[in-house]
Image (cartoon, rainbow over all chains, first blue to last red; front, side, top):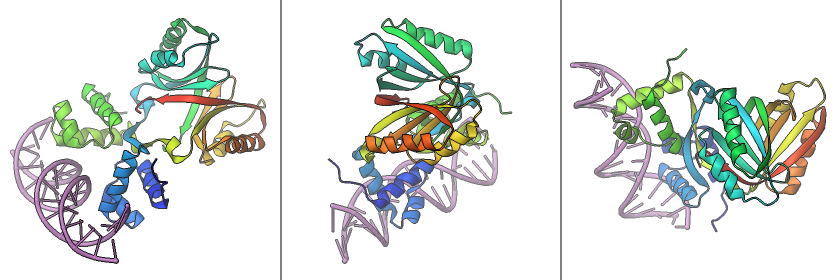
Length: 147
Length: 147
DNA sequence: GATGAAAGGGCATCGCT
DNA sequence: AGCGATGCCCTTTCATC
């Protein structure tokens, strides 16, 4: 496996968490290294899989997806985990899916336009036959690290 | 308020979701625009608050934070929502916090090193509020949009 | 094995049309 | 919105500790 990260690697990661488009020169100045050294470290973090990518952060409410909800899903006794992942991850409204040890069996984080939209999605999930029950939690407010 | 986004804006957002460090030249080629035009659109998306920032995506397991959990929290009748946000968002292990309409009252998404670490956090949450009960869900596997 | 310095090619940025 | 010039940044190479 890869070697453990030193303090400078963690500094670089934190700087990139704050702003993923920071320039190498900017980072280099803050961690007291040359741009070449910073680039090598970032390249290494990508190669070892610590950094999986870079992305843009979006205010979903401004795009008209103002409602967030979690849907708890329960299956019959022995259900393949891959099945629920396949159904839910296909839906563009799905933000994340968590398979759970215990009760419920899975937790799906959804972003929708309105209640009718939400109902349609929950119906879709329920229609995947092995589901015994769902319970949907409406999100009033959410906070996320790095926003 | 700002004007609605057209199809090109959505294309640009999707390209940046895939790779937040994509160059303007690359984006311009894919949406059939000049780099200057793409830059103006991205600047406008930032000014109107649609784009809130850029960040790096990290494999937390490789950093030694291999365990994910959700903790459901229930309060006494009249508890201030801001209170739970204050405590939980201060913890570096907190990935996200959702306040919920109904039961439970809040959902906290945690990333921890091990079970002892998790127990310490749940104890902290229980100690710092007028919490009536918590229930912690262990995450077996997670999928997230854009990974 | 990792670093800093320097060169080149590419890219972002800005003014103009 | 496109075009073009300027300056910055990324990237690679090479020498050093």
